[in-house]
Length: 252
Image 1 (cartoon, rainbow, N blue to C red):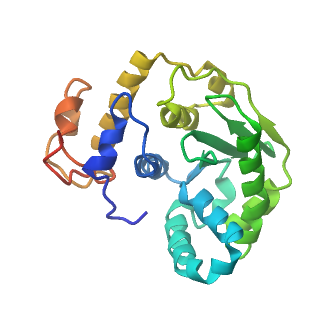
Image 2 (image 1 turned 60 degrees about the vertical axis):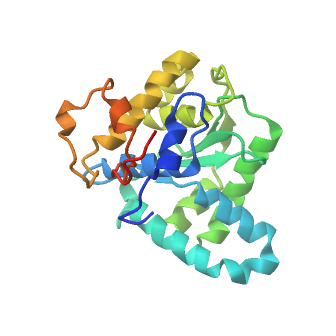
Image 3 (image 1 turned 45 degrees about the vertical axis):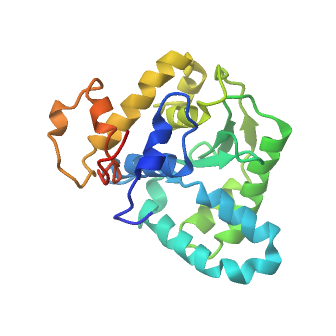
């Protein structure tokens, strides 16, 4: 994700109730979470491309040459997320898709505890278990030469892994919201307390949009963020967001 990346109208619309959050929306949101950590990040958020590039690289090895430029781009993107000294990182959060790309779930690497967790708001099944295990086994090979990710994933591949039983979402649309809620939880014990009705999650969706729009990393000053309320969010939804940057006034 580059400095001037924009959350366009099409992706911003996926925050509406009843919509499935897009990859780009979630990546932009967690990138903003990363930037809010000062002075040194304790939590490291990896984008969805972490999963897709590893799977593409190792399941289509004959095309590995074609992936070279993609991997280089991904590595530069990752560099934005990883501090020069990563010794303070305590947890790593990796957003994952199921095999059909229709459901979000979350892998959490607890560096301090030396344990991996898989959080799934639909309940973990064997397919999603295998995806998490596969990524943990391949990540050290993919990033072995990376100054920070290589060491981190070499350790993580040896950690035990737990697949937690958590409250289930009441619909088929809110999985992306649940992983954002897991990521934002202050402590692991809060994960089991995350449960929302469809109506409640509709409000939470507008809240995360408001967080992006009012973020200090929003580079467009078209309004006074202090005056924005959740009631006002509907008005601001008419604009695209660049890391919450407004980029289009045709949002309808």
